[in-house]
Image (cartoon, rainbow, N blue to C red; front, side, top):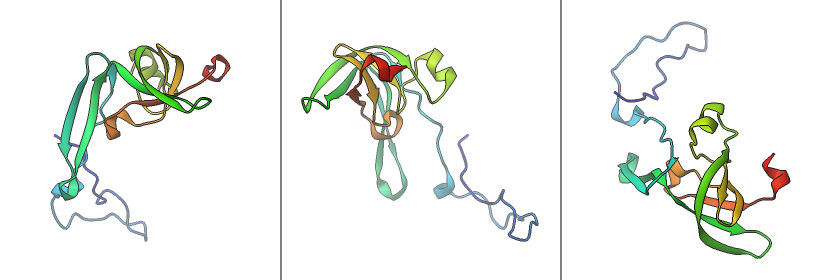
Length: 132
Protein backbone atom coordinates (compact mmCIF):
# COMPACT_ATOMS: atom_id res chain seq x y z
CA UNK A 1 0.00 0.00 0.00
CA UNK A 2 1.27 3.48 -0.77
CA UNK A 3 0.23 7.11 -0.79
CA UNK A 4 -1.45 8.29 -3.98
CA UNK A 5 -1.00 11.82 -5.33
CA UNK A 6 -3.51 11.81 -8.20
CA UNK A 7 -6.10 14.54 -8.73
CA UNK A 8 -9.17 12.45 -9.51
CA UNK A 9 -10.57 13.15 -6.04
CA UNK A 10 -10.88 16.85 -6.79
CA UNK A 11 -14.01 18.53 -8.15
CA UNK A 12 -14.44 20.07 -11.59
CA UNK A 13 -14.31 23.88 -11.91
CA UNK A 14 -18.12 23.81 -12.23
CA UNK A 15 -18.41 22.00 -8.90
CA UNK A 16 -19.29 18.62 -10.40
CA UNK A 17 -17.64 15.33 -9.48
CA UNK A 18 -14.79 14.03 -11.61
CA UNK A 19 -15.29 10.50 -12.92
CA UNK A 20 -12.15 8.36 -13.03
CA UNK A 21 -11.17 7.95 -16.68
CA UNK A 22 -8.23 5.66 -15.87
CA UNK A 23 -6.57 3.77 -13.05
CA UNK A 24 -3.74 4.89 -10.82
CA UNK A 25 -0.30 5.47 -12.34
CA UNK A 26 3.18 4.76 -10.98
CA UNK A 27 4.22 8.44 -11.30
CA UNK A 28 1.30 9.46 -9.03
CA UNK A 29 2.58 7.20 -6.26
CA UNK A 30 3.86 8.94 -3.13
CA UNK A 31 5.46 7.54 0.00
CA UNK A 32 4.96 7.59 3.73
CA UNK A 33 6.95 10.11 5.80
CA UNK A 34 10.17 8.90 7.40
CA UNK A 35 10.29 9.77 11.08
CA UNK A 36 13.98 10.16 11.95
CA UNK A 37 14.83 9.16 15.51
CA UNK A 38 17.91 9.19 17.73
CA UNK A 39 19.67 5.80 17.43
CA UNK A 40 22.46 3.99 15.56
CA UNK A 41 22.92 5.46 12.04
CA UNK A 42 20.55 3.88 9.53
CA UNK A 43 19.62 5.13 6.04
CA UNK A 44 17.29 4.05 3.26
CA UNK A 45 17.92 4.81 -0.43
CA UNK A 46 14.86 5.00 -2.67
CA UNK A 47 14.58 5.33 -6.42
CA UNK A 48 12.43 8.30 -7.33
CA UNK A 49 11.02 9.67 -10.59
CA UNK A 50 13.54 10.15 -13.38
CA UNK A 51 15.91 7.56 -11.91
CA UNK A 52 16.93 9.93 -9.12
CA UNK A 53 17.86 8.60 -5.71
CA UNK A 54 16.49 9.94 -2.44
CA UNK A 55 18.37 9.18 0.77
CA UNK A 56 16.23 9.02 3.88
CA UNK A 57 17.67 9.04 7.40
CA UNK A 58 15.81 6.51 9.53
CA UNK A 59 17.99 7.07 12.61
CA UNK A 60 21.17 9.02 13.41
CA UNK A 61 23.48 9.81 16.35
CA UNK A 62 25.46 12.72 14.88
CA UNK A 63 24.70 16.09 13.28
CA UNK A 64 26.81 18.62 11.35
CA UNK A 65 26.54 21.68 13.59
CA UNK A 66 27.51 25.16 12.34
CA UNK A 67 28.45 28.06 14.58
CA UNK A 68 27.34 31.22 12.76
CA UNK A 69 29.57 33.47 14.90
CA UNK A 70 32.84 31.68 14.07
CA UNK A 71 31.75 30.24 10.70
CA UNK A 72 32.96 26.76 11.64
CA UNK A 73 31.06 23.50 11.16
CA UNK A 74 31.83 20.30 13.01
CA UNK A 75 30.32 16.89 13.62
CA UNK A 76 28.65 16.70 17.03
CA UNK A 77 26.84 13.95 18.88
CA UNK A 78 23.11 14.44 19.40
CA UNK A 79 22.34 13.99 23.11
CA UNK A 80 18.56 14.44 23.05
CA UNK A 81 15.64 16.05 21.26
CA UNK A 82 14.59 19.14 23.22
CA UNK A 83 11.60 20.41 21.22
CA UNK A 84 9.87 19.73 17.90
CA UNK A 85 7.55 22.58 16.89
CA UNK A 86 6.22 20.61 13.89
CA UNK A 87 4.12 18.21 15.96
CA UNK A 88 3.41 17.71 19.65
CA UNK A 89 3.46 13.94 19.14
CA UNK A 90 6.90 14.16 17.48
CA UNK A 91 8.01 16.19 20.50
CA UNK A 92 7.05 13.36 22.84
CA UNK A 93 8.52 10.59 20.65
CA UNK A 94 11.78 12.41 19.86
CA UNK A 95 11.33 12.58 16.08
CA UNK A 96 13.81 14.85 14.26
CA UNK A 97 12.43 17.06 11.46
CA UNK A 98 13.37 20.48 10.08
CA UNK A 99 13.12 23.10 12.83
CA UNK A 100 13.63 20.62 15.67
CA UNK A 101 15.74 21.88 18.57
CA UNK A 102 18.34 19.29 19.58
CA UNK A 103 20.89 19.21 22.37
CA UNK A 104 24.36 18.38 21.04
CA UNK A 105 27.80 18.10 22.59
CA UNK A 106 28.41 21.69 21.39
CA UNK A 107 25.15 23.11 22.81
CA UNK A 108 21.57 23.66 21.67
CA UNK A 109 21.05 23.64 17.90
CA UNK A 110 18.15 23.99 15.43
CA UNK A 111 17.93 21.49 12.56
CA UNK A 112 18.04 23.24 9.17
CA UNK A 113 17.95 20.23 6.84
CA UNK A 114 15.14 17.76 6.15
CA UNK A 115 16.50 14.39 7.33
CA UNK A 116 13.69 12.38 5.72
CA UNK A 117 14.37 14.05 2.35
CA UNK A 118 18.05 15.09 2.27
CA UNK A 119 19.72 12.18 4.02
CA UNK A 120 21.72 14.38 6.40
CA UNK A 121 21.17 16.28 9.66
CA UNK A 122 22.52 19.84 9.52
CA UNK A 123 21.99 22.27 12.39
CA UNK A 124 22.99 25.75 13.60
CA UNK A 125 23.86 26.66 17.18
CA UNK A 126 21.30 28.77 19.03
CA UNK A 127 21.16 30.43 22.44
CA UNK A 128 19.06 29.34 25.41
CA UNK A 129 16.54 32.18 24.89
CA UNK A 130 15.88 31.11 21.26
CA UNK A 131 14.99 27.57 22.34
CA UNK A 132 11.91 28.73 24.27
